[in-house]
Length: 612
Image 1 (cartoon, helix red, strand yellow):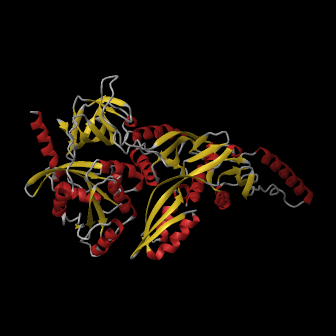
Image 2 (cartoon, rainbow, N blue to C red):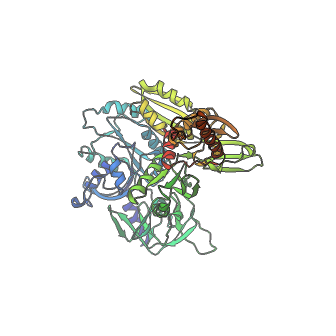
Image 3 (cartoon, helix red, strand yellow):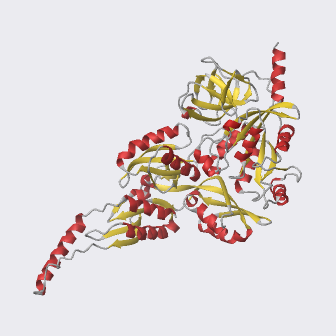
């Protein structure tokens, strides 16, 4: 009886194909997912819309995928039934770890390339992720129906860059449906079915998790051994959490309950877990053993905790909206556990939060969701990165805010994060981009020409990239350059804290950490901008940029002069002199005790100038 059951599971696994759609942003992943869904029995024309798998309005409006989406498709290919588990993955570098865990749950991947644009930076990055996970990769040339498409040139790029055979690529149009039957045949013939496992003990990969208002935390899983059933007691190895499975199911594309998830299947489960912090992407799910017993199931490889790389202060536009911001961040954290937050206080902006993000796009999306979904008006400070400070006493600290910068006399070394950037750009713009990267302290690794395009690999400090690198790159390349990066570790840098002083008082919220060579230029620019933003007072206002106790830039807002002699009509000049001397003494006293309040509008404008 057991052999018959095992043979049934094995026969079922032969009909399963688990594959992902990977591509650069806007190369057609979500549109292709729509066409694949239309080939399935689960397609309902009444519920049809563009980007059916994208759940957020911001994804549809901007044409990007932020969260990995999964759908189970029963299809018939050459008169045989199959089950396709399709994963539509994000295309941006900020979500590369999420993409890597999605690829780890698959046996194959369609590498989609826009036939009108060719290989882009994230095309290469996602292809390398798929190769690292030992996946079967099928290149797909999308938008072949457009007049500007050049399939032969793109095929040559794929052959030279990634080593694909010339006849391996499939030409399609995801918008019109051209070539989709060939894609179904390729999924059956060129993707391997899940590998069967003789182990009856549960072993599953936690691919993703999110919060559902009705079902609680939903966990997307891929089962590698054993089976996942309702009522089963499980354990998350990295999260060290035990729970009982309340329901299991698959996405068709809506959540649909099933009896169990067997080896090779991808689906969801819900448990009594209430917090996303307990369900970490990439964790291994096993059966919970009796207390004291040792689990024989090993953890799956590749797990790591997601660490924020870009930090930014979020403040409400007015003090009475602080509670609204706190509530909005708490609700958003239910669906996105990858950003961190902690309380922060600024003498200029009041109470707020210091938040950590996976990258600049992640920061932009979170801010837009807060404003759109929760109607919270925000003041966003300049983004910064996390530094490592080694002190003379042998300890080290992680520095996320310039306000926490220690006394320079205690610092042994300051380490900053570096990245390895891959830039694909038109050949005629190579010189300008090389100059830009050199200005930002970059180190060239390689330069490879691909007919009309070139692949430039540079190592760059992350703190130079988070401000305006992407905008300047697009400007220099007339919008045709693409940019992707991966962490390259921490390196010692000649970094200093630039403090902005207003009449001798430091404004921590305007401070920043930067390389010593760029400190003077940044200080002069900040002081000059603040001079135009701070309103005149009845006394002079000194605006200074300082490194420690050394002032390196200064601007002065001249005093607002009241005409005290206006009431004197003719008469002796000595009367006017007495009035002017009295005013002079009063201004001297004002300068000694006067304080300057920087308007919020001026503060925000100064930060925007600093970033641009």
